Length: 212
Image (cartoon, rainbow, N blue to C red; front, top):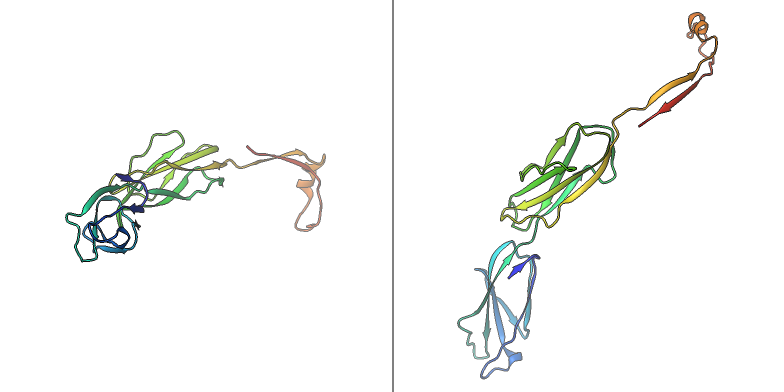
């Protein structure tokens, strides 16, 4: 059985030739761990299962101390997908540079310190291939809308269920200011006037600005 979550609820029934079912005790063992004792219950939840193959053993114990042999066993395969997360840029960012840096991180369920690789893509360009890098810089982006995409792959080869994305806009073109109308005697003013001597001298003119 394959699990895509790290928790598993076990349910069972037991019977004995002497002990009533409700008086039976049980021992549950996960792999080589110490057995867990369950009294007066027919269910138990295993939590925090790491990715990989696991063997679950269940044995009933009656009032006389007789233990079921052999135990009932089930093997499960835990395949919780890793989760990638963009740190920068953020959704909706407006950036004034054509070289945009992306940083990310991810979580995995293979145990502390297990490796994690990432697959990165820009817009409709091909995927980069899985690498351990946690950042990259994309040069020469044109003005307009762009998207970065990211997948993660854990040490056992499990990949993220869906790529995550971040969408942003680049506007690296500065605005342009144009003088529309100067005073008619502008040439004479600039030739004869000493602005340092007359710092409060006012000149009225019209300008306009455009941006992409």
